[in-house]
Image (cartoon, rainbow, N blue to C red; front, side, top):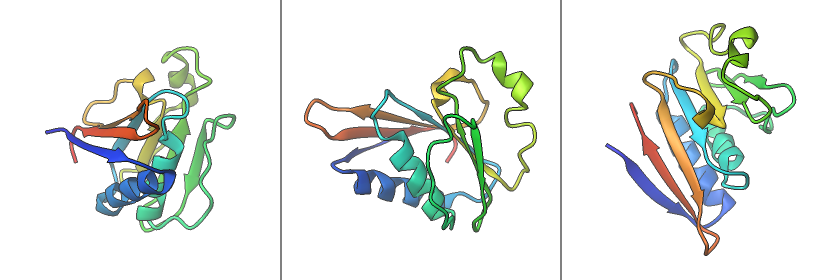
Length: 137
């Protein structure tokens, strides 16, 4: 069943992410999908907060992945610079992640991961964001 929310600010987007992060136990893959400026990184920061990560979380656009320690370990991927999903095999995408780790993937619409939670963020004309969550929660 899909769930949908409207966020009116970056902090509301982070709060929704934090609520999700608080419920994650490890082993989940969360795909963040949406255009530039839709709020994927704000949502990711909230998920990290919910997982107990205290470090500053930024999009790992140039490093492709960042690892964080918290109540549950987090690997934050950013696939923006990838030209095709085929490049992921050479990077070991998701292969090295421990079953206790939450994997959070910005630009997640570029990959197919069975059983993943899909979070889609849409920037609305009025500046709000429509956030839809689908998949195994």
